[in-house]
Image (cartoon, rainbow, N blue to C red):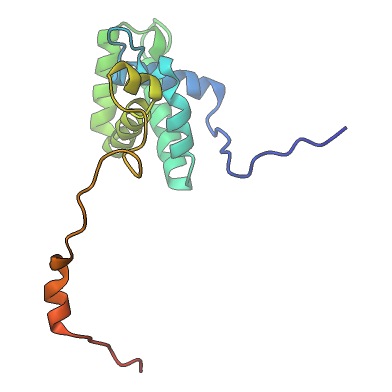
Length: 162
């Protein structure tokens, strides 16, 4: 039987299933469903956030500590965890986390937006182009070489390599 090889560029999720479920619930509150579009968590943006946060040890620590803080804050009620809270309580928990852990919250929101607003389904629903801006997207004006005139007038200047 042939051994299956993993793509070396493929990133494995570093969050546990329960952390991913919590992250999805949080993402649905950060970017809630609107019209025909699901919220960020329901759209699967948790995979993007997990992948980006998993790139380095500092981001992994920030993400796991931040999710743990949300989990603790959400479980202080008798309703269960964060996902079981009423929407207004979820908002209160997230506002508290934003205040207590601004670096985590900033990273979370940035990655939520990055994952959501680059998703082809969102782009399509908003009537936007699904291609990346470069090289096929936005047209650029021809390069104006006169912008280099000042540099050319100065002549060649080399430092001595000593």
